[in-house]
Picture 1 (tube, rainbow, N blue to C red):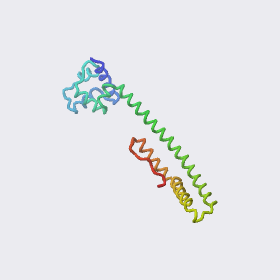
Picture 2 (tube, helix red, strand yellow):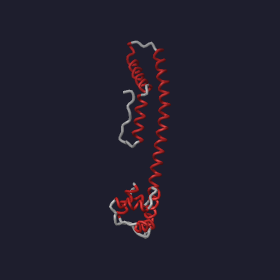
Picture 3 (cartoon, rainbow, N blue to C red):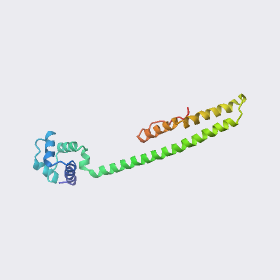
Picture 4 (cartoon, helix red, strand yellow):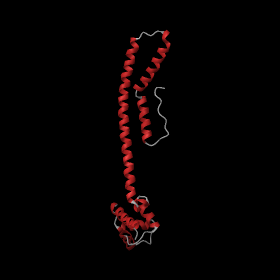
Length: 177
């Protein structure tokens, strides 16, 4: 038997035991999948690594265990991919938490800026001759109120969520427009 066949045999037994199935129960499931020729001796020899599996048997076993065939033939690779995927997921969640914390800080700063702008506006005695400054202050005020109202925060949260979920072709939100 080759190394790969021994690994396959070990993984079949491990998956069967993990599911809490006896050999007889697994054999019944294989029969219901159409492998009526398979008997107790053949299954036992397959699990002990003294009989190589046929391709159809490997396919049916993987289906019954709910795993790809590669999980039975190369389980070490499965763990590497699982670990890498989990690490990426944790990193994305950490980045999301950091961004949300920074957004909360930004919201507080925006509230402070909006309040300061209100105070500044009340100090200035603007008249109609100063239209350029009035227009600029009005635009900044609208943008600050938009951000302070939480709408911008919600837009950015949705943007971050879509980014974390893998949508790389998304456009950044436009604030206060």
